[in-house]
Amino acid sequence: MLTQLFKSNRPAVLLLAPLLVLGLFLPDLWTPLPAPRGPVMPLYGWLLSVLGTAPMAPGILALLLITSTTVQISLLADRAEILGRTLHLPALLFPLLLAALSTQVAFGPALVGMPLVLAAMRSAWSVANPGSVLGNLFNAGFLMGLAAAFHLPYAFLLVAIWIAISLIRPFQWREYVVPTLAMATVFYLTWATLKLQGVTPWYPLHTLLGAPPEPGGGGSQRILTLLLVGILFLAALPHYLSTFQRGIMRQKNLRASFMGFAAVMAVLIGAAYLMRGHVPGELPAVPLSVFCSFAFMGTRRAWLGEVAVLALLLLAIWAKWG
Image (cartoon, rainbow, N blue to C red; front, side, top):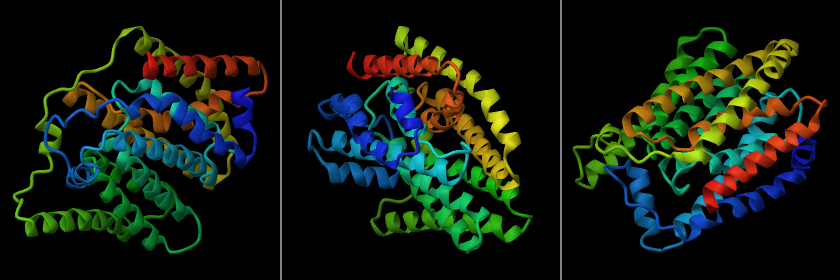
């Protein structure tokens, strides 16, 4: 039922996203936010100071951010024509995957920066359309810089912007320099602000290396979730290849750009696990919510898709409520 509902071309189903997010992440409202285990990036530190000691403020903000990200993913996949047809399966899979893969409270620097990452990739992929290419690339680099000012690893996603440019546009060296300068502008303004406040020198890399490893998830729920995600990934692969082959050149370029984005995300996931022993759920949930949507494209044996979504829903409830 859920799968068929979100497979339909009905934008109204996105109104169910806040209800799904609320049902899954409601425990985060009363779960205390753990103290940072080391230095944090300036914008995230500022946000923590604004939230202060309000007990439910991080949980409420997390619900809003997850809902925003859920809608953004669906619209991004639709407008970039990644799935080949208009549907809203990513809006169903993202909150389920995020809840099932998260081992701690949802609120954190990776979640806060994710809406900016998606906005940056949307701006980068828009260079496939006629318009201001350099302006869109500057916006992409600037937005990614803002995301990195919350969560430094997002700065590495500049590579995903370069990959998109190389696949969509003929080579023009300015188009690679503009997003790089835009991101550098964000870091320069951040350093200048900290300098005026007298809190320099500033060492951004300490936000990665200055904290001890965080506890990772484990147990039966984690193993079952990874097993189910692996099955969905394998089921999605032939549908993705078939959709890729049928697409015109513009669609192939955008889908290849998405796979480049997913590959860079995979590098971030591996680096996060090696350095902290913990991977923020947003990093795998974003690309998987789009790619695994291909597993539900077939019309034969639709009941298997419903069973898979139900199993993922139960695992998500187990992770957040159990």
